[in-house]
Length: 124
Length: 200
Image (cartoon, rainbow over the protein chains, first blue to last red):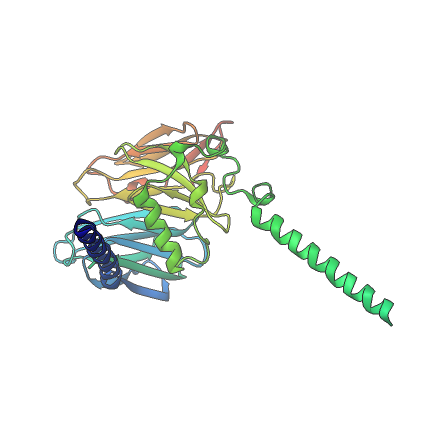
């Protein structure tokens, strides 16, 4: 009987810890919406310096666009671009350039201007 | 008076039943594919989903989070249950096609996604170029889905043309470390009938 109580107690503690972990992760994960229904063209919208996990652009109409991570000190960048039929583009961060030293950016590739939303996610 | 009331109630009841029936049919999506399928003209994936077509948990979670945030109302939500495996990229990652609730077409790997309008004769391929480590690294990777009518896609890098065949509606080319993404961004599409045009 005592063993059963102990096992039940451990199970409850583990369950609470799991729930707390999930809540903590959700609470501290964040999004930097660095272009919120703004107009982008070939001049990029630029985020803050954060440890990004992904970068996204979303345009009202299909446009040739690019998203990337850029370190202004070293000029290092990594990114993704797409053809003119694209409305949404997303890229996970794969380690380059180093986070905190890079900004997330989005812009069009010589395709006029358009209303867009660009955002980058960062973890805890 | 009672008869008029009875007829009115009957009319309301019939109208309600018709509305419910129409809603049920619409929600099952019976006619969705026939109306405007975003995978029309891409024979390799115009088939029922099999286990190999299922997105890995991480990618599915990533796309679900995007949908939950509601950041892309112009494409709708990803129809994750209808994903199809398109091919394997030179870096070993699996490439999927995922339709959306607004009949847009998403080309998705574990690291990136590109969503847009369904393919057409004017815009017969999707094109995504990813450079994960910038100039001098592994080199940019260009890939996409193509209509049945497309035979090959040609890129020009460092002044030289490089043509890759389209197999099962899929193409991919691994650039050299010295290649820029710009060099891969304006391919020429050649159709099976021999005609060529810019990718759009």
